[in-house]
Length: 170
View 1: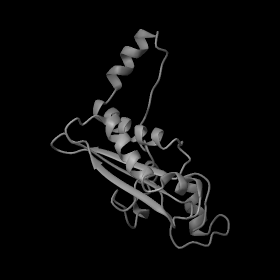
View 2 (view 1 turned 90 degrees about the vertical axis):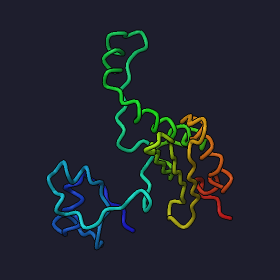
View 3 (view 1 turned 60 degrees about the vertical axis):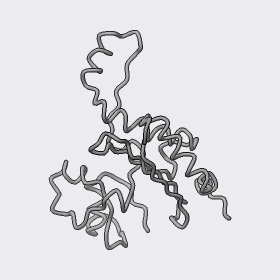
């Protein structure tokens, strides 16, 4: 594995050998970045969430304003997407319980099933990918996103997630 920094276009130039001396045969990039640049023809394979979980909150746009700014709060509420907010709440509750941040080796993906039940997959892994913990729990009767996030967090902690995140060998 080789770390590559830069914008999508720069990364592809490095892969193609037109910029720098990158020794790699392939690169994993976000589809949306390739779409934005009109480069979807570069996509050779796509991973499903069953193969690679995204980072917690990936693709979610969050907007904030002051509590006392009623006109802006009213406008933002019109832009809110309740399903996305609910799913992101479950993911963030899991992340909060693991006591880490967006740069930690933690992935999470919550979806709403066709019957309305929430489903949250969570994963922590070592920086080199040699160790991991994985949990997948459904919302069941309460279907409360914060409760679901806490349950997935507890399952991960039961699989030594803290030690994995901190790189403590077993």
